[in-house]
Image 1 (cartoon, rainbow, N blue to C red):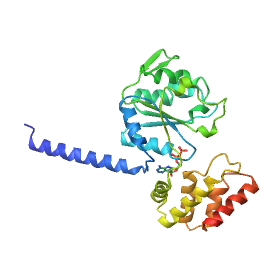
Image 2: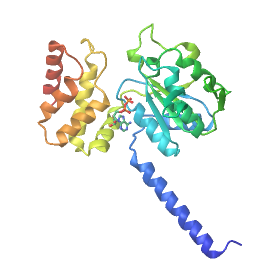
Image 3: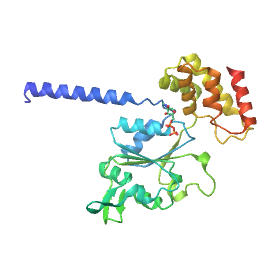
Image 4: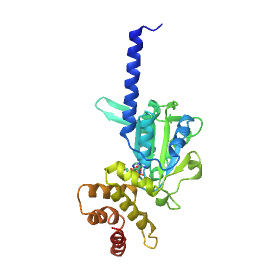
Length: 281
Ligand code: ADP
């Protein structure tokens, strides 16, 4: 016997919460490549850590942001680099006006809050980071804070996501099996043409004929195997090219600036890539 007004108010509140969720859900655009959304959801619901593999600029970060929004979780993103230590993730004592105090790092904050922690390019980080990741990525789901004596138990809402780019790896820097076998993993690559066209349109509003042209160019550039390119042109760069064309830049100049120059410094390769563009435009 809920009073009528209360029920109404409750209903209205629910409706507006629903709308908010909707709008928030729509605010990040992500074009799935395959079944990665379902994988992420199963992993999240079953408290499994996820590893996203793929070349630079293929949508890994966007995907994680999108999933965080979908699940209404806060997201802590850490861009890993070769000086990043366990203390950078976990926290450290700092010296303030009133003496030393403990300051949580992003990983600790994510564990405390039940948020998603995303470690971008995790293999770049110092080896000592694995010490803190291991107990978090098995069924214990704990984060021992050596310096404060605390041991945090990760709540169900906490999720660890890491990304890495197999293309950058060399034998010395690859991830150890003992670490990589703690994650369920999915590969994102260059999206298939139809999807990449949708991404360009979704990101920039460019006309479909232009989006298709850019994706065709990308296909030809990616097919050039005999040149010493470390990695093929990314979706991110295609978005740049589309943005420049949308803004009125000469399409050839836009393609050279966004799809050729960022890939290489070698004059011969630049000339070869430019030829591909001229053949397609
Ligand atoms: P990564 O983390 O793999 O280096 P990002 O997630 O930052 O790459 O993606 C780079 C850019 O490419 C994004 O800002 C977005 O504009 C675009 N992009 C790539 N893939 C997608 C996708 N599947 N849906 C929407 N945008 C995408």
